Length: 69
Image 1: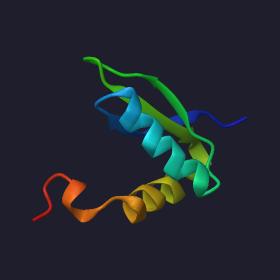
Image 2: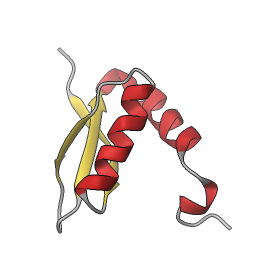
Image 3: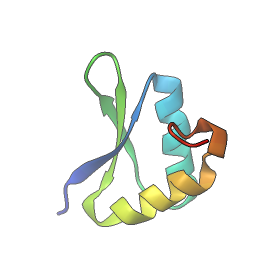
């Protein structure tokens, strides 16, 4: 049995559910959990980390990515 690994931190439940939906549409199981300071975390099975990161990156608009011009 593999453990779950955090792949994203959302500011609220709605944002976490959006990320979870992106991952599920890519066929990746994702769980939402409580983070620090009222944040919400999104975790995936350990073997799906790379695939999850690629899915999130592909489905995120460039202007939504912090640090991008």
